[in-house]
Length: 169
Image 1 (spheres, helix red, strand yellow):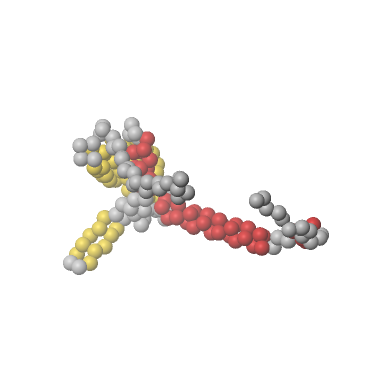
Image 2 (cartoon, one colour; image 1 turned 30 degrees about the vertical axis):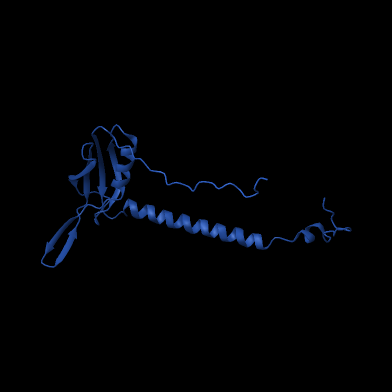
C-alpha cells in the first residue's frame, strides 16, 4: 500500500553570483560644474568608454561627487571648495580590476556657484515623489473604507439559502 505522505523536496540551494569584469582597459572623462560647497551641480559633457555599463557607473558617480580641498592643522581640519569647471577621468585596469579617478580643474568661476548639488536635487525629488505616493495610498485607503455595502448597492439583503447544501458522499 502506498504511503499518502508527500515526497520531500530538496531544500533550496544558494546560487553563486558571478560578476564578469571587462578584460580590456576602459577610460571615461566627465566634465562637471561644481558649486561653492564643492557639490557637482550638473554634468556638462562626457567622453564615454567602449562599455555602456561602465559609462553609467561613472556618470552616476560623477553626479554624487564632492570636490573639495581639505586642510589639517593640528587637531582641526577645514575644507574649502572652488566654484568651477572640473574634468574627472576614470581609468579601469583589468589586471587589478581597480578604477582610478582623477580630478583636474579646467576653469575657475561660473554662474552655478549658488545652485544646489545634483545629488541634493535628486534626493529632494525622491522625497516629494515618496510623499505624493504615500498621500495617494492614504486617499485610496480612505476611499475604500467609504464604499457602501453590497446590501446598500442592491437595495435588499443578500438572500439566504433555503436548504442546507448537500455534499457528495
